[in-house]
Length: 380
Image (tube, rainbow, N blue to C red; front, side, top):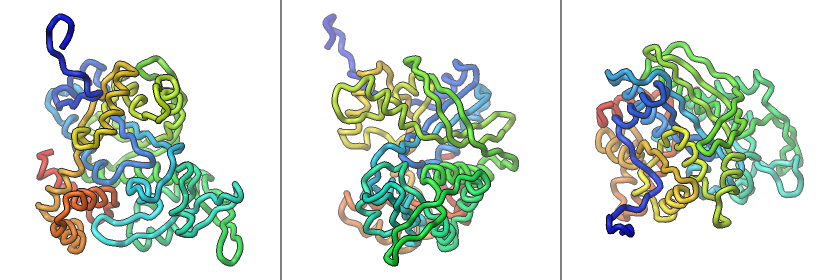
């Protein structure tokens, strides 16, 4: 209750926006529409696919207010790795959505020397330092691609080889030490995300021509702070509109803005996201009302610190996966995963199973099936 007796609702720190509001934002910004993902390493396959379908629907609207779409994917290489976190573990032990096929591909820094790495599962499970210091061993990636059938990942590896971004690392083994080729985890999965977007866009946007390259740019946030950014960029056109997808490590932005606004020691990455939103970006994210109170508190505190709500396009993987399973569960994720899901009596186990399914990879042979099923369910 305000002093004048008028009731008001305290800001949640986010605003869920409709298609009409998105088109209004685009019109107000001269036809430019900006989205963002916030992921430590990369967005998952299903949320990427769903976001691209939404982008197509927005461009297809007859109001013709969209001239250009930008999607920035913010990595966080300075965040600590945790093997217990599915969203992080999947990038060192890839697993198919519809099978149990998985294969460890990482080497992590050993504590006894900066230039020594270990491939052992024990070291991988113990590792809790920077994500950006993890390297993926090239021969393991090649074997993983053969085992899982995730062919598009080979394009990322070839790009890094052609650009001289394959490095030599000293690996500790049971027999001593060996020198192996390796690539940085953020480089590999950043590029792989873009090549996956290409794979999906061949079906969604029917593209043939595209360009992937390194980029350097400067970004200005709502508070007028400017930052240099660099990473990888994919561009193509659909119906004469330019689509631009960029992925880069935003650790320096998270750190500086958190330091500027923080009132407590804990890092609040939503501070940076609110400043992106204040400068016109729309966050593609799960509905905060389905998250725990700790995350919702981060949203609120970011709003209190910066004065900006986070504009939110809800990309609800949990609900989508439930509906996908009802639609064609066994064919999409395989009999074993399907039976495990529907036989689960415990709600927490059920949600955890849905979540773990959500972060896995979709092979090239199933991409069109998933797109068609999602389009049918959502009408997009």
